[in-house]
Image (cartoon, rainbow, N blue to C red; front, side, top):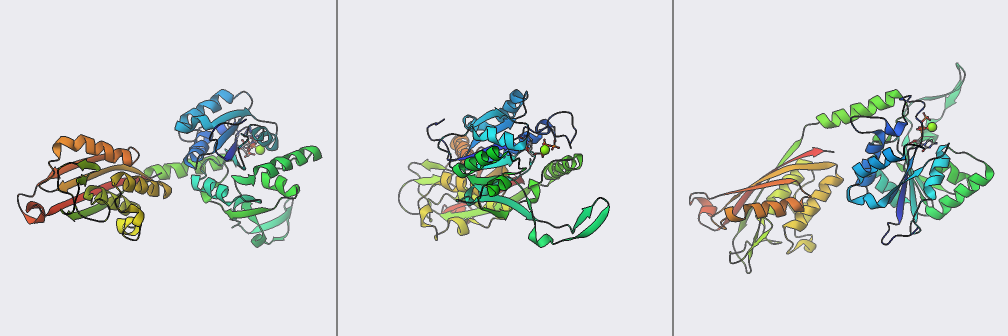
Length: 391
Ligand code: CTP
Ligand code: MG
């Protein structure tokens, strides 16, 4: 199968297990966690990562439900995702997923739906680390381990030589498919892809995994996922404040609040002097603890000279998303005699909101009764407050 502009990375999300150890009466991927299923949480991570082909491997008879979960999570990436029916073992399910890859795919990630809370950043990190070797995320083993025989403790195990493997596990596509063919021919059944890949002679490296990528296997694991999600939902939002001041000066038209104002005197400054956008950026960066506008967009970054609000704000929103924050709203107040703001308030709010990916932005304007530099018409002053929350 080939499609135009198909991503060259794919992820196979195996969700076809029955969840015997969880014992919920429905396949584990369709078990409700907090109003959303295990699979939905896994897919939310997948669709928050860089765009990839997504093949979800469903339990036989549950394809329609799995498809609905994809539709709910994928947004505009719906066309990148397909459902295939799984096999009797995990290996058989991955194999079914491999058969559905587009021809253009070069790197394959294999991910357990059961690792529902795996951060999107872990998917991106594994994909980026794949070369000709396989890559797995893994955590150091923290418990003291014992070798046992029934109830008898027979000896110690050196945990420094061990790591706990997670998913997604990433591989070069051709080598992984060859390894699957080898395992099939040899009648082997491996519980993870790294073991299968290594059995066929492939090298596997590890990168650091994440505590949140634990596998939901038992009822206790499901409880842990629920508690983590509840704690996240209860976490207090964070606020940030930003101010900016620019003097009128220079040539051309004014740029303020993401709009061009023909006939109005411009503001001077590196970039377009849009003090509304700059105060918003500082409020957002401050709320997220990501530093300030000078650090990320200042004179050391000539690529932003002359840039307008949409560029600054879109980049800021991306930085916040990468740091795990969603933007609630930004409230901005502009002080100055000019421009007369009220007629274009709605337009400005729309442009600024769009630049932030749809977060609510409100802008108010005031004069200062002739007092101060704003009152004398020398420049403008802006204050912005941003509210953000962890995702
Ligand atoms: N899996 C699969 N097809 C199978 C078996 C497992 O797609 N035939 C998937 C599961 O859906 C899960 C992942 O492989 O996302 C890891 O498997 P595991 O945690 O063992 O899930 P289950 O097999 O569903 O659970 P159990 O072993 O308790 O029955
Ligand atoms: Mg299993």
